[in-house]
Image (cartoon, rainbow, N blue to C red; front, top):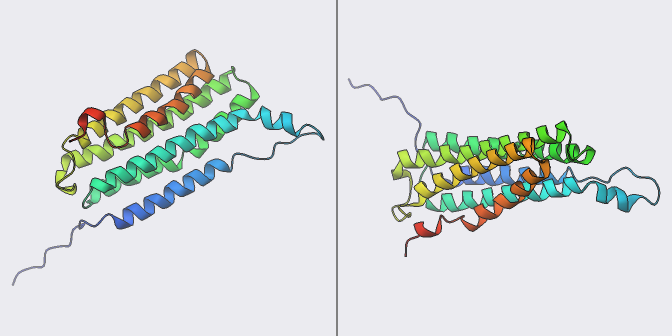
Length: 216
Protein backbone atom coordinates (compact mmCIF):
# COMPACT_ATOMS: atom_id res chain seq x y z
CA UNK A 1 0.00 0.00 0.00
CA UNK A 2 1.51 3.30 -1.11
CA UNK A 3 1.65 6.28 1.19
CA UNK A 4 0.33 9.66 0.16
CA UNK A 5 3.18 12.09 -0.26
CA UNK A 6 2.96 15.07 2.16
CA UNK A 7 1.62 18.15 0.47
CA UNK A 8 4.35 20.74 -0.03
CA UNK A 9 4.08 24.48 -0.61
CA UNK A 10 2.53 24.71 -4.06
CA UNK A 11 3.31 27.30 -6.66
CA UNK A 12 0.57 29.80 -7.27
CA UNK A 13 -0.55 32.52 -9.62
CA UNK A 14 0.53 36.08 -8.94
CA UNK A 15 -2.94 37.60 -8.49
CA UNK A 16 -3.12 37.52 -4.69
CA UNK A 17 0.47 38.71 -4.23
CA UNK A 18 -0.12 41.64 -6.60
CA UNK A 19 -3.38 42.64 -4.89
CA UNK A 20 -1.83 42.45 -1.42
CA UNK A 21 1.24 44.39 -2.56
CA UNK A 22 -0.87 47.15 -4.13
CA UNK A 23 -2.73 47.50 -0.84
CA UNK A 24 0.53 47.89 1.08
CA UNK A 25 1.80 50.49 -1.39
CA UNK A 26 -1.46 52.45 -1.08
CA UNK A 27 -1.26 52.42 2.72
CA UNK A 28 2.42 53.42 2.65
CA UNK A 29 1.62 56.48 0.52
CA UNK A 30 -1.32 57.39 2.75
CA UNK A 31 0.85 57.22 5.88
CA UNK A 32 3.30 59.67 4.31
CA UNK A 33 0.68 62.40 3.90
CA UNK A 34 -0.35 62.10 7.56
CA UNK A 35 2.91 63.84 8.49
CA UNK A 36 1.71 67.00 6.73
CA UNK A 37 -0.27 68.81 9.42
CA UNK A 38 -1.63 72.24 10.22
CA UNK A 39 1.32 73.80 12.10
CA UNK A 40 0.77 75.57 15.43
CA UNK A 41 0.87 79.34 14.93
CA UNK A 42 -0.21 82.66 16.35
CA UNK A 43 -2.93 84.68 14.62
CA UNK A 44 -1.54 86.04 11.39
CA UNK A 45 1.41 83.66 11.44
CA UNK A 46 0.04 80.78 9.37
CA UNK A 47 2.08 81.65 6.29
CA UNK A 48 5.38 81.67 8.19
CA UNK A 49 4.44 78.47 10.02
CA UNK A 50 3.64 76.69 6.76
CA UNK A 51 6.93 77.81 5.22
CA UNK A 52 8.84 76.74 8.33
CA UNK A 53 7.80 73.12 7.87
CA UNK A 54 9.32 72.88 4.38
CA UNK A 55 11.40 69.83 5.40
CA UNK A 56 8.13 67.91 5.78
CA UNK A 57 7.20 68.79 2.19
CA UNK A 58 10.62 67.77 0.91
CA UNK A 59 10.50 64.51 2.85
CA UNK A 60 7.04 63.78 1.49
CA UNK A 61 8.22 64.46 -2.06
CA UNK A 62 11.25 62.18 -1.69
CA UNK A 63 9.32 59.34 -0.07
CA UNK A 64 6.27 59.57 -2.31
CA UNK A 65 8.55 59.46 -5.34
CA UNK A 66 10.34 56.43 -3.91
CA UNK A 67 7.14 54.50 -3.18
CA UNK A 68 5.73 55.49 -6.57
CA UNK A 69 8.70 54.08 -8.49
CA UNK A 70 8.71 50.98 -6.26
CA UNK A 71 5.09 50.40 -7.26
CA UNK A 72 5.97 50.99 -10.93
CA UNK A 73 8.97 48.66 -10.80
CA UNK A 74 6.90 46.09 -8.91
CA UNK A 75 4.28 46.23 -11.66
CA UNK A 76 6.93 45.84 -14.35
CA UNK A 77 8.36 42.83 -12.52
CA UNK A 78 5.01 41.08 -12.24
CA UNK A 79 4.30 41.65 -15.92
CA UNK A 80 7.20 39.24 -16.44
CA UNK A 81 6.50 36.81 -13.59
CA UNK A 82 4.36 33.82 -14.57
CA UNK A 83 4.04 32.00 -11.26
CA UNK A 84 5.28 32.29 -7.66
CA UNK A 85 6.96 29.91 -5.25
CA UNK A 86 7.61 30.21 -1.51
CA UNK A 87 10.97 31.93 -2.00
CA UNK A 88 9.51 34.62 -4.24
CA UNK A 89 6.61 35.17 -1.82
CA UNK A 90 9.14 35.64 0.99
CA UNK A 91 11.22 38.05 -1.09
CA UNK A 92 8.09 40.03 -1.96
CA UNK A 93 7.10 40.24 1.71
CA UNK A 94 10.59 41.50 2.58
CA UNK A 95 10.17 44.19 -0.07
CA UNK A 96 6.80 45.20 1.40
CA UNK A 97 8.26 45.22 4.93
CA UNK A 98 10.80 47.89 4.01
CA UNK A 99 8.30 49.88 1.96
CA UNK A 100 5.70 50.03 4.73
CA UNK A 101 8.32 51.34 7.19
CA UNK A 102 9.30 54.35 5.05
CA UNK A 103 6.92 56.77 6.75
CA UNK A 104 8.88 56.44 10.00
CA UNK A 105 12.25 57.84 8.84
CA UNK A 106 10.42 60.39 6.69
CA UNK A 107 8.76 61.83 9.81
CA UNK A 108 12.04 61.69 11.75
CA UNK A 109 13.89 63.59 9.01
CA UNK A 110 11.18 66.25 8.75
CA UNK A 111 11.13 66.88 12.51
CA UNK A 112 14.92 66.94 12.84
CA UNK A 113 15.48 69.34 9.94
CA UNK A 114 12.76 71.70 11.16
CA UNK A 115 14.53 71.89 14.52
CA UNK A 116 18.04 72.45 13.15
CA UNK A 117 19.51 71.84 9.69
CA UNK A 118 23.03 71.16 10.94
CA UNK A 119 22.94 69.54 14.35
CA UNK A 120 23.62 65.92 15.30
CA UNK A 121 19.94 64.98 15.24
CA UNK A 122 19.59 66.03 11.60
CA UNK A 123 22.63 63.92 10.69
CA UNK A 124 21.28 60.89 12.54
CA UNK A 125 17.89 61.38 10.86
CA UNK A 126 19.29 61.33 7.32
CA UNK A 127 21.42 58.31 8.23
CA UNK A 128 18.27 56.52 9.41
CA UNK A 129 16.44 57.35 6.18
CA UNK A 130 19.42 56.30 4.06
CA UNK A 131 19.71 53.04 5.96
CA UNK A 132 16.08 52.08 5.41
CA UNK A 133 16.17 53.17 1.75
CA UNK A 134 19.30 51.08 1.20
CA UNK A 135 17.58 48.12 2.88
CA UNK A 136 14.68 48.59 0.49
CA UNK A 137 17.09 48.37 -2.44
CA UNK A 138 18.61 45.23 -0.95
CA UNK A 139 15.15 43.70 -0.69
CA UNK A 140 14.97 44.07 -4.47
CA UNK A 141 18.35 42.33 -4.74
CA UNK A 142 16.83 39.37 -2.85
CA UNK A 143 13.76 39.50 -5.10
CA UNK A 144 15.81 39.41 -8.30
CA UNK A 145 18.13 36.76 -6.86
CA UNK A 146 15.17 34.45 -6.39
CA UNK A 147 14.15 35.02 -10.01
CA UNK A 148 17.72 34.26 -11.10
CA UNK A 149 17.65 31.00 -9.12
CA UNK A 150 14.21 30.06 -10.45
CA UNK A 151 14.01 31.32 -14.05
CA UNK A 152 11.02 29.04 -14.67
CA UNK A 153 8.95 31.53 -12.61
CA UNK A 154 9.26 34.05 -15.43
CA UNK A 155 7.30 34.18 -18.65
CA UNK A 156 9.26 32.61 -21.52
CA UNK A 157 9.25 35.90 -23.43
CA UNK A 158 10.77 37.94 -20.56
CA UNK A 159 13.94 39.76 -21.59
CA UNK A 160 17.06 37.71 -20.98
CA UNK A 161 18.80 40.68 -19.36
CA UNK A 162 15.88 41.77 -17.15
CA UNK A 163 16.92 40.02 -13.93
CA UNK A 164 20.62 40.84 -14.28
CA UNK A 165 19.91 44.51 -14.90
CA UNK A 166 17.39 44.55 -12.07
CA UNK A 167 20.07 43.39 -9.67
CA UNK A 168 22.50 46.00 -11.01
CA UNK A 169 19.95 48.77 -10.50
CA UNK A 170 19.19 47.54 -6.99
CA UNK A 171 22.85 47.36 -5.96
CA UNK A 172 23.42 50.82 -7.46
CA UNK A 173 20.56 52.21 -5.36
CA UNK A 174 21.82 50.56 -2.17
CA UNK A 175 25.27 52.05 -2.70
CA UNK A 176 23.87 55.47 -3.64
CA UNK A 177 21.66 55.68 -0.54
CA UNK A 178 24.55 54.54 1.65
CA UNK A 179 26.77 57.22 0.12
CA UNK A 180 24.02 59.80 0.63
CA UNK A 181 23.77 58.84 4.29
CA UNK A 182 27.51 59.23 4.76
CA UNK A 183 27.38 62.55 2.95
CA UNK A 184 24.60 63.73 5.24
CA UNK A 185 26.43 62.64 8.39
CA UNK A 186 29.89 63.93 7.58
CA UNK A 187 29.22 66.90 5.27
CA UNK A 188 25.68 68.34 5.28
CA UNK A 189 22.24 66.74 5.83
CA UNK A 190 20.71 68.77 3.00
CA UNK A 191 23.06 67.15 0.49
CA UNK A 192 21.66 63.76 1.50
CA UNK A 193 18.11 65.07 1.04
CA UNK A 194 18.99 66.20 -2.49
CA UNK A 195 20.14 62.66 -3.31
CA UNK A 196 16.98 61.20 -1.75
CA UNK A 197 14.84 63.36 -4.04
CA UNK A 198 16.91 62.62 -7.15
CA UNK A 199 17.26 58.83 -6.91
CA UNK A 200 13.59 57.99 -7.62
CA UNK A 201 14.02 59.74 -10.97
CA UNK A 202 16.69 57.18 -11.89
CA UNK A 203 14.41 54.31 -10.94
CA UNK A 204 11.53 55.82 -12.91
CA UNK A 205 13.60 56.23 -16.06
CA UNK A 206 14.92 52.65 -15.80
CA UNK A 207 11.67 51.01 -14.67
CA UNK A 208 11.68 48.68 -17.68
CA UNK A 209 15.39 47.93 -17.42
CA UNK A 210 18.63 49.57 -18.43
CA UNK A 211 18.58 50.95 -22.00
CA UNK A 212 21.19 48.55 -23.37
CA UNK A 213 19.27 45.63 -21.90
CA UNK A 214 16.11 46.10 -23.94
CA UNK A 215 15.45 43.72 -26.77
CA UNK A 216 14.48 45.04 -30.17
